[in-house]
Length: 290
Image (cartoon, rainbow, N blue to C red):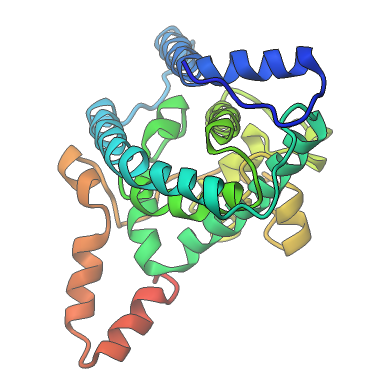
């Protein structure tokens, strides 16, 4: 087990709680996610009205999850974690006090706005959308949708978290924030919860995240926030759920385990090869998806 080093004296009870959570965060997420998927499956099976379930969705999600975990184990543990520890040990500009709850809150909020812009880029840059579209491909939404995470994200996303050790936030402690955000995000992938207007002033809710997964014209590229919906309201990408949500990515479907392992890259690379110059290809790769 790994303990979080505390660099200045502070609230011992808070430190003990954080230490306990960090050591068990991944296990808690697995238990919660498995429980949520199980309860959702039971609810749909015994629903009075039939609930649409995509054929082959379980196999596709499983293939995506296994590939993501494999990539994350290789990239995150061998490369990014080592680099993050090096940055923290040798390049950090200060040392944040992990016994102070305000430090955790502040870093969590900043982490969320960084995620907002990263997530927005995944929708507006073709090279990233070719990966992220895997998560948006299901034509229904549920807790299993949250688990359909492209393995490519484990390759490029961790590098954007190196600002944490740079400002003096221990990389081991950052795991607790990642798991907390992932847990909250998992709970927002459901169609069984109606709108909660009071929470929607500040937080992402199942309703606002359903909009994000919608292919309705008014819902495309809306509600990018992970935990806080404030960023969408601040940067003009918020849209409330009004019309029924049509899920999926239109005709660009990803239905099989083989397709989920390559995403939209075969089509994108085929398009790039038709362009005459490298400048044109680079421009197309970083331009918005069509």
